[in-house]
Image 1 (cartoon, rainbow, N blue to C red):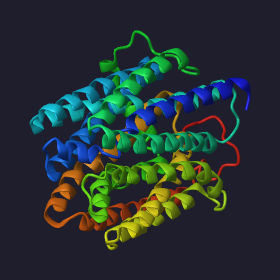
Image 2 (image 1 turned 90 degrees about the vertical axis):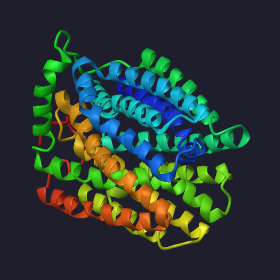
Image 3 (image 1 turned 120 degrees about the horizontal axis):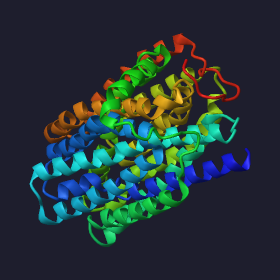
Image 4 (image 1 turned 180 degrees about the vertical axis):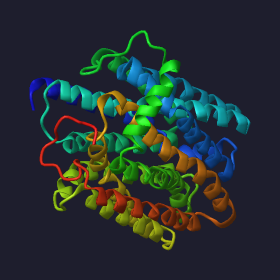
Length: 419
């Protein structure tokens, strides 16, 4: 890797480290935080659903901002918005605010994350291309996921310990501080390379054009379409299962205040991200095609999740949680490389944001219903239903495999292009 590309990779990994460390501080205790604020299971997961609804509403508009004004600007807006919304969360927890406030601020949190989604990947691919990088994108995305996993491991465990030592609001305060630091680092180190902002054009006027182009380069391409359509089934299940695992582990452990145990779920997922990010791209080479690896990883994750709903021992669920986490973590960098190689630079951030939108749509549908079922029947049945819903993505990956896309079998990554 040449020095310029190496500098781009370092900036990417640094930003992944800081953003994941900041955001993951609350992941191990988020559901407990909402319940402690006076919300029921239904209201807690409904608040999460409003978060994903916010992501749905703003994914494409913020993707357009990134494609018109620049990926750096989008990232800075994301860091500042998340910092402000996190502080509002702390205030609402302190005063036991009504549910309507949780719904509104959760939408604001969704807005903050949409400024990140799509923009960071688009910035990385454009910058690497501009600096003459000729390696495989799987490897860079895998390194990024490994860094995210390590940061998530530290953040989730640290957040649980902060809550144990102080209060459930303390991890959220620490998160806001780290997001402010992330803003400063991005301001100094992140620059748009290989991308020229379209100064003078109105984002509102360009939404229709970019939306049309993005649909054409996204759902309009058959190899991209089938993989993107798996997002509601996989993304919706992952967000529910991750947050439901926290109180479920506490229930199996036999203590409602062992916040360090609650952080264990996030820590396991973090560890799986490290291993999956480092080994996923390498293990993918054991099979001939990327879609074959995606099918294998999804099947593993689905079976493990279904087993979580059938096993009622703490140790057994922990083992299954490891298998479930590794299944989806090992697929992420391979999926990113598959999609990015088929999307042109000008529409990349918006298409990737639309992919995230589809995942958020699944979360909006699933979380309130499964949260209500957890109130009535416990968590175990919800994991069984989640696995059944996720299994619906397997035929779609099979259709993608039949397309034999140019990025399905790659010896060396070339300039991303339209399929």
